[in-house]
Image (cartoon, rainbow, N blue to C red):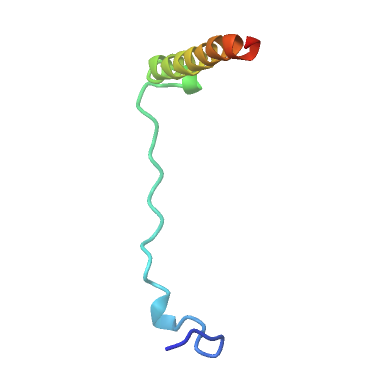
Length: 70
């Protein structure tokens, strides 16, 4: 069967319930307050991510500097 515009049709009424309903939003952990990414539950994770990104950027700069001098 070749795919043409003639063979493509609109959804039948029975085809509209194929996907499940949208999931309910997940509530933040209790007691977290309005701290955001630096709130108590996420502080270590946020600082860890920032530290790793800075370390990789610093190391890339350190490696790139001697190569540029060659």
